[in-house]
Structure formats: structure tokens, C-alpha cells
Length: 182
Image (cartoon, rainbow, N blue to C red; front, side):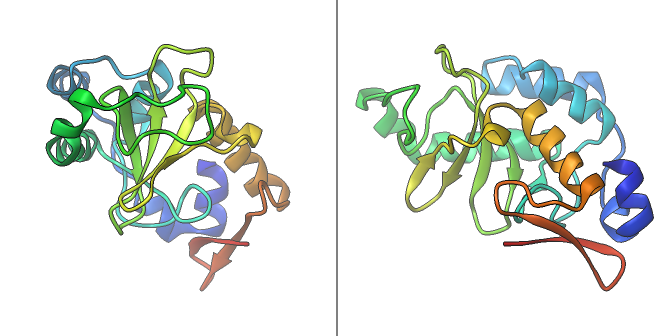
């Protein structure tokens, strides 16, 4: 992904943050009460989030460690009381509850929505969901959303091949910024 970004969309590449410190990650894990999944930790150790530029299809930017903590804490403040008596929903279903304390946000769209890694104990643990601030969380059955490594791999493959993935096609806007066409 980095090589493609440097070559075709240098402004998006420049928006990637420097590596996170392990101590930052440890503090965030303590704040949210659970460890980050290994692929998320590896990603943060490479790039600690980014400025608001589209990186993951169709319009997601990576959160930095502090942004992950803030997003998780905000959702817990908003939905925390409701979570105490709420049903967890089907951890293998297409739709989740409004929020769950075992979801870790890792990407944002700038409008209050997040991509999350579902850390609930189930056969589909590690899958990616879209936590919409108005409609709740949904989980796509497309293979690219099965895990963070699958999402990153599908994104990189779409960039390298120029072929659409899950209906999204990477394009360079103004010859220096990544966008995804439907």
C-alpha cells in the first residue's frame, strides 16, 4: 500500500502518522480494559493513524492510538448505561447492538462513525464492523471485512491491480490524493 500511495497519491501517503510508541498502546489498552488485537497493534507500530484522508474503502481514515481511546470512551459514555441491561446481539449476526464494550474502533469517517474490530468471543472474533452513530453496527459478509489483515490485503490488492474490491475502485484525485469510486 505504501509504495502505491507514494507513487500515485503522495498527499494521502503524507497524511500517515509516524509509528506509535508501545507505551501509548499499553496505556490505551489499559484505558479500554482489553488488549488490542495483534494486527491493530502492528498497524499502529507502523503508522499511528493519519489525518482525515480516505485510505480504506470507501471513505475511512485510520485513528491514532489516542483517537481509538477517545472514540471508545465516547461510545461508552453515550451507550454505557444502556449496555448494562442490553442484549449483546448475535456475535455472529449481520447486525450488532448499538455499541459493545468489546469493540475496538480503528478508523473514522469524520461524521461520527467508526470501523471496529469485534473482540467478542465468538467464531467470527476479529471481524470488521461499521459502527454508525445513528443506526448501530453492521457486519458485511464480504471476505474483505472478515478481519483487519483481510481488509488491508484487499485494499492493497485493489490499489496494485486497479480492480474494484467489494464494489470500490481506487482512484487518484488531482494526481495526489486517494479516493474510492463505487
